[in-house]
Length: 423
Ligand code: GTR
Figure 1 (cartoon, rainbow, N blue to C red):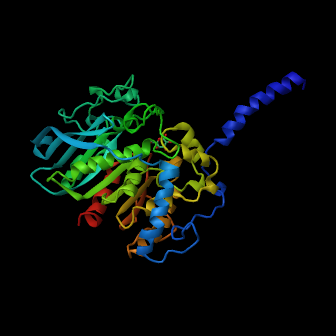
Figure 2 (figure 1 turned 90 degrees about the vertical axis):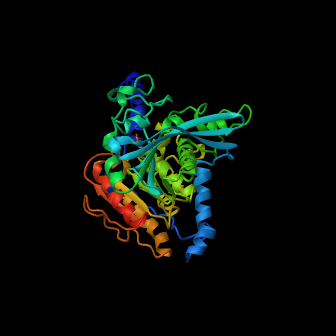
Figure 3 (figure 1 turned 135 degrees about the vertical axis):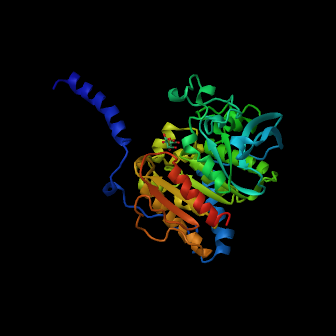
């Protein structure tokens, strides 16, 4: 081999090596050995023995770490939050539901941002428990109801849904009804409240828009390294929606369940952790940076997620790219921050990218905190069979199929919420 060919092959190797580094691991035997930080041992080594000490000592330090280093802190508070009822119909969905669309207006530093909350409650019912969660492409995608407004905010493109040039469109009305089992939610005695996540913070690596920009000091262009990324902004938006829900007599503000799928499941978990007014949380296939343990490095990893989605987490979190073992926390501790409130973690068998086993083990290790309250969680380390939920206040299931939200998932969430959230 002459010098030239040698040099050429080396040049070819560099991108291949970078690629190899990023090849996701899907083999259980290749999961590295690691010691999980004990949820009940403080950073100073002291053991936590009861719920009181957990709440006073351990919970705040875990929350503080996740705030500064993972999702990022919210820099201050809003000047004002106000609600305007845009529209309502007591005979929506063929007389089954009461529909409302509410504008939630957030103001800070003379700037404002608004989002539209779509709420359905069972007809002629008041004070009902409700599932609150974001949708990916607009409120009008979750139902065929023609009265639901098409949002104007920036959207991810989706050719199948007719979303080109990042503009939500009428064409996608009803395209996501499969992910929102509205009939069964209402028949189960629950309301459903949803928001298009792009209205709170567009899902792109651009900090000039969305919620972040409201909080900037003069000439600031992006959050400081310990400040919030998009997931924390979405979580904050859920809390502002909860501010409204607490004022609505049709809804029981003490029984609002934060629900989310995938990246929005990460947001619902963080909302439940930071805002204890949420009565319960559902994490559907939330994966890396959500329910799944990072130290397993199975499927999506910290480096991968921070590279593909540089805006999701605090800049500080990038320090742990390919350094999972150095991270003094793991995601079971995020789950533990929800305790003693009911929590449902769900995986899908074909969703290996989200590491179902890592999601399961995370729920298992979080159970130690539920036990302090004598509440049952995921006690065993053996994963359940497919489509066989382990149902307790802290529940887990893995169903057949892909990364998605299905009628099967909703059937379990409704049953669980009837038992543990709104008995
Ligand atoms: C994937 C991402 C996951 C998950 C998912 C989703 O591309 O890697 O962490 O959040 O998107 O939100 O659908």
